[in-house]
Length: 270
Image (cartoon, rainbow, N blue to C red; front, side, top):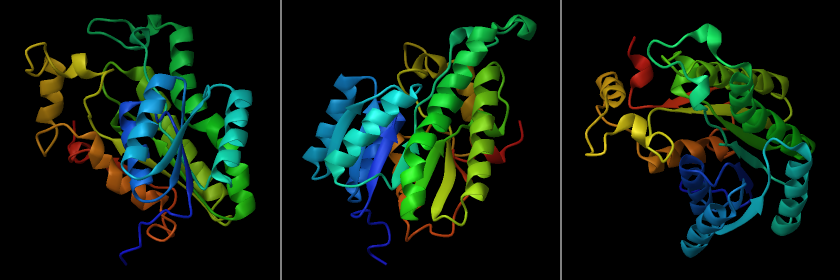
């Protein structure tokens, strides 16, 4: 049982490992013994995260790639396979984001939402955030007969939150794709699951949640009011669920699931 979550035989690829949540997930995988390939566009942040994993006794390396380019991802896959001495058995799709012009502000008109903004958000979260990386890295998993793909969805993919209409729709699509792939590959040894983080303050959403003096914004206060645990999440609180879903021993019969890590947010009717 003490080795249930060990990942010493695994090569884990974390797309978007340069971000706050993806980076902490990469650290968790490295801490449990996986060789971790951090993939993204920001070399400074990617190399810093890899160095942190190495300093804690893990094995990690940064690989530059654009999640919206099959060719770029393919080049990264070949470089990772050569570096690790084998193909990826764990894929974490943690890239994604939103655009201000794809958000409906109070008094805004949904019918005037720009189509290019909508498409960009779907590209960020569905195409580059799940579809293309899976198409590039999954074939080797299927051939090997073992693999765990972990997509990052969202509370807004479960509950269509106000304002973030394109983001909510794109994350709902990620959950649906996760379930479809899980069923499609159920007999191949490749499991596909999703994690839906609740509200975790990070660089891109801090101004939405907090005022400059550290108090909650109106939006932040509303979120806390609907979170039974009465607080925001900490990035390291994604470590356990990431390791669990990655481990072929701990979660061998788990596929097609969307796991909320949200302090109870999804349990409250809004």
